[in-house]
Image (cartoon, rainbow, N blue to C red):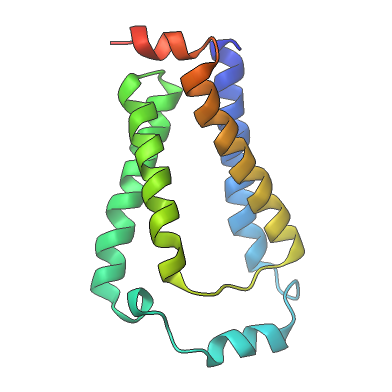
Length: 136
């Protein structure tokens, strides 16, 4: 894999990630009965405490953005931060409780998640991984 292809993979991931968020704002993709059922559930502890939510989400999002930029610039700290934010994200994801998503949103999210896995794998085990080790 070349540096250009790796960066193209990063940009493709970004497109799918934002698309998976944006499509959830299209009205009518999720039946109102499902949305009403979700609204009846009590808020998970982390959602019910805004200071906790902001205290966890903001640093994690900032770290994820920094890691993404580091990956794009082929910096060793970028792949380390990206791997760490991925692990932390997996650990706290269950704390946010149940969600409802459209089929289209789920598909786009699955594609972006798969791309992210490929990006991390390439950053550590493909020929481009040598560029991370040599980048200063």
